[in-house]
Length: 156
Image 1 (cartoon, rainbow, N blue to C red):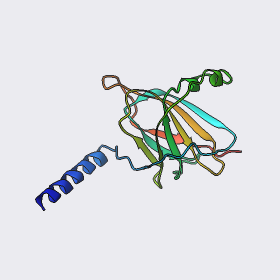
Image 2 (tube, one colour):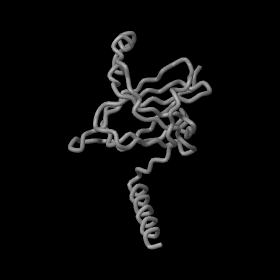
Image 3 (tube, rainbow, N blue to C red):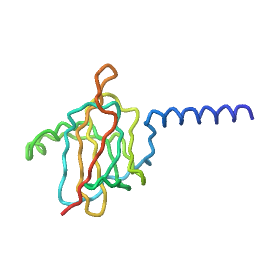
Image 4 (cartoon, rainbow, N blue to C red):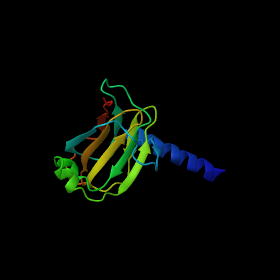
């Protein structure tokens, strides 16, 4: 009985620390492939460095979007090139993680090493794919941002 109480207290304390630092990850894991979208890919190259890949997904009006598949890929450098060079120089990528956001639109990926990543956002029902080039800063590097606000666009 004492061990159970200790574990419950420890778990509660860990949740408190996560919530108090704003880094609680709530999205459900997903192994599904990138969803079919509309006719356009929106590419965003973040100029700031981040501490982690976390944030919220919204539409053009700032309304929270749910049921968005968020994926993390390595080798994102092709996103910085113009078409058709981007397609010619695109390397085989490996999917590192994926999740589906809930009603709060939040996503968070823990345990990723400092480096460059592609965040890919897809939602069925005519939404354009959004791809974000983002850098996680090393522990000693300055990171100006803590979370991302991703805006998805409906297709035309």
